[in-house]
Length: 348
Ligand SMILES: [Zn+2]
Image (cartoon, rainbow, N blue to C red; front, top):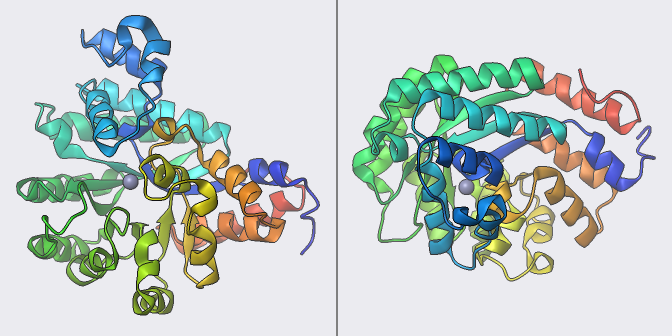
């Protein structure tokens, strides 16, 4: 392969990248969170001690703590201007890493249930997306996500997602507590309708629960990609199925370590997932909450797992290959990556 003579870290930074598992509400940096909280007269954990006080709360030891902060951040989002601000700030951070395309998950009913109108949300996101493109050369698509434990919110989420298609909504997601307590079968008709209407099925599964949760997401939701999916390794027939059907896993190592899915990066199943021939894309989930960025995920994993330049390039290529971009755009980014790896320009 020509080039690939760049030092590993420089190669990672130079490659144009795609990010396929990223939550908008979990991407709010503490500085912006504080500005929004002040604007609306709200307080955030530690915010009486300013941004450093709040930043200390961007660390947690349990999923419950994580959820509390996540919801506190969400509660600072009130109007279209707020959604535009967090989208543009997200794009600024992506551009700084040369992430040129991202599929970003939004959980609309968290906001609508607090009194934000669907129109306000959609118009704020649309404005933010347009500015991301114009000001930062970052293309965004949206995945509207509904929660497993709030089945009554699934239909309004789909309705909003369908209305948002003209503003870049490409998928319907599912997250929330992953347990048998919240079965997926009741969501099946909704996901069928979503797919019939041109949206993609992009649920979280196989993070906090095992293979049965992934099988359920495949069976009832027609999952086309899996958020996390790392626990598929507990079932050889599932691994074989995912490999044969080429169903990609959005793997977020720092998130998995922070939330206790694995004890430390060195114990992460990523090398085994790759060895098993699965389609993998590296992602950051809620980057400031896990003290990471997409670039950091590449740097940390490349270092810990001693990846070669070819392996890095192949994973970075997978980000675009498994994206929902049109074929022509995917191919253009793949050739831009090869050019960057050979030491050429990093932007189209
Ligand atoms: Zn996620």
